Length: 167
Image (cartoon, rainbow, N blue to C red; front, side):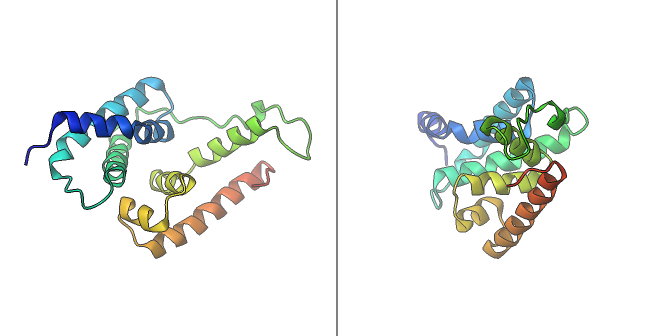
């Protein structure tokens, strides 16, 4: 079944933030983000005829986009730069707290250390997706989402404790 090109463009435009977020989570350089963005749109277009409106379009879009990102990372593993953590460069005023921009940077650096699948799960959770939606998007059970979230939070706490930041 052939789908309407205009309908596809409209749906992608309405949900472009999904692509933007995924590209920012998985690629550090602008040129890599652009490459991944184009690959995601291409894969969405290739798969669009299979979208049967059985789920919300954004859920289907997340599935395709995240799978494309995982594949992109595997294929470009050696070429993609690893973002270095710059904890020493942060301007921490005192030991009692961090400025909000510093804390946000620390959080991004901690998240960057997670495995690709865990980043996806955390990104969806931070977007306030329900465990049901996350399980549908990632293809795992709700129970597995819950267990993985507990482990990810613990891993982030351990990473944060290394630099003495309270999350």
